[in-house]
Image (cartoon, rainbow, N blue to C red):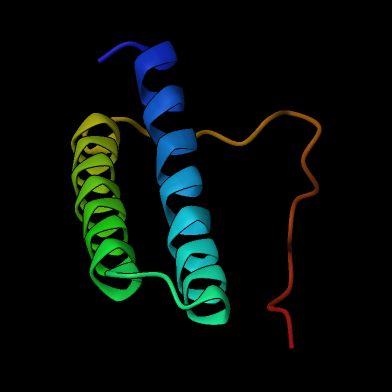
Length: 80
């Protein structure tokens, strides 16, 4: 999956989640029909898409080693 596609899908998850909240809030306030079913569907779609993207991300980073940058501070004593 390309970076552009991944980033677009991540934005879609944010939009779906916000739309779910908006639908619940406005739907109840205005007495709209089926607002709970629509919000539930949007939330389920956002959750499923987030899960899929998380699995793709884990598979991508599975064999990659995270190497700190040279300018990162080196910790010599345990924190705390």
